[in-house]
Length: 143
Image (cartoon, rainbow, N blue to C red):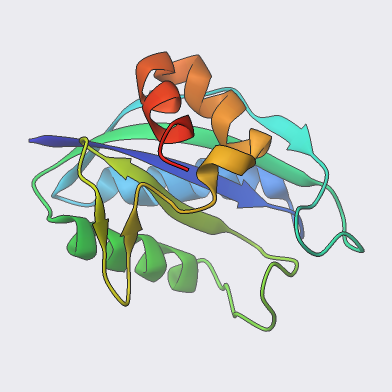
């Protein structure tokens, strides 16, 4: 089983409840086990700032899925929860991003690992440091 680290966020609806539901759905997948969760932090929006504050957290998972397949599960989870992508960095019911997968560095048309913007986003690094300081440090040095 490989380890991967996810960043989850929401800022419309009931964000804390949506984070709980996203974790539940991910953990219910037969190829994913959520092994660690950070606390939830409130953060200001990044990129597009004229929207409500976010609730953000990080999760560590063990999986036998390849990185791109894990991405598909994350996107399926978002869709199942009702996310519709209207605008880049806009308000969202849920966002599930893969921040790192083992220590793999890759760049494809669909997925870049580690996440290309994670090093500049405290709303990603702070929760990640809580559950995996060494992974947060690795991600932060990959800018």
